[in-house]
Image (cartoon, rainbow, N blue to C red; front, side, top):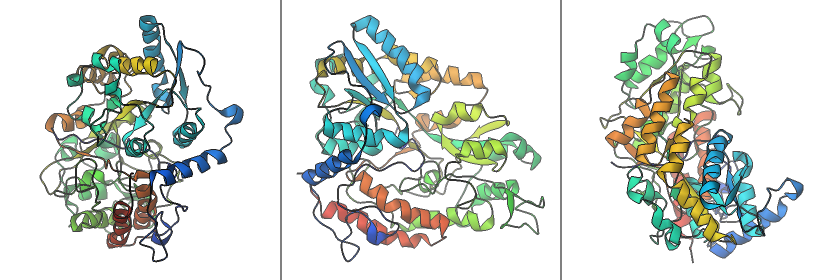
Length: 493
């Protein structure tokens, strides 16, 4: 298969301190690394980045709110994660690990909005965890800063059966130097959650959704289905005469944000299936982004053009905090693209929920971004041996079977994924729209590159303008030039 991992789409994800000086602004001239011309900035170095991290850490007031440290207790290590829903599963893993090794794992859960800031501060101040849940979007920067321990240099890593993981996952956590800096925890793909009652009331069938397709010219059957599901305040549907696109009661499709530079739960299924477009010039560790590609820009013009037609919620229709599960549950939207990590959340809504695979695109396939999380060890830890045993344990079928039994994610080990599917099936919703991409190899990688925080800072306002201000996607070409200048004017030495 051609794996594709990344984002676990989160609400506009927070940005780690940028590798260049400056504060992300609302336009290209204020993006990190932009000079007087708005296009060229100072040479970036690791020393400069560490300085920025130190300044950020100094500005934080962690005090009594800081997570506890296990320093001084030889039989205890600290492990951080952000997802509260996964805390019970990993506590069960920690209990099993303590019985096996005698080592206590103290777990700290910190919400996504604060997680990366406190973790970064911990790197600088020496108050961070021994082990933490890592994300591909942050991985390259941490490798570049040399704050992670190579797992394959630890004796415990020999106990990890790397062949047991879903194909491609193990390699995503390798640095450019070939070292293993993360152990795969899980994987995720995207699909379309929808209100089954609304679909039926519109005279549509599940087969209509199973065979839908799209194109950037007229949107194909996918757009026609969105039109049928969109209803204005007078009860007129989007495919009927008199539909009022300015006063919509139910949108065919809902989103929470414009998707920044990856569009995982917004436009990525479409840019992934329009042709051969990918984020960068290489599957991993690319050095040139491709937001200037004509196919990519045509796709985004079509996608955000759905706002003008009243089929996609406009910016401001909901508060920034209103996630798409809330939108679907309230009846304000009929469909939403989201990730498999949200499976139980959508399954628990009080509306009749269905799941469909992403529509087939012009390249003849239905595509999904393929993402996953991993566990990494902090180089500053004074208990690397114990930490490496914990990470190696989390990479075993025993631990991942425990996670599978909680039915919250698809574990990275293939046999454990199968057990998770059995648990998910108890909700009554199908998992096939998510798992088919892994089985068929119709996945693509999230951009794994250096300067991830800077790319996010540059592209977030650029893509947001397509949604909020309805500017053409051709405006992304200038932002793309700024992104690529990061690689031309920067160094990792």
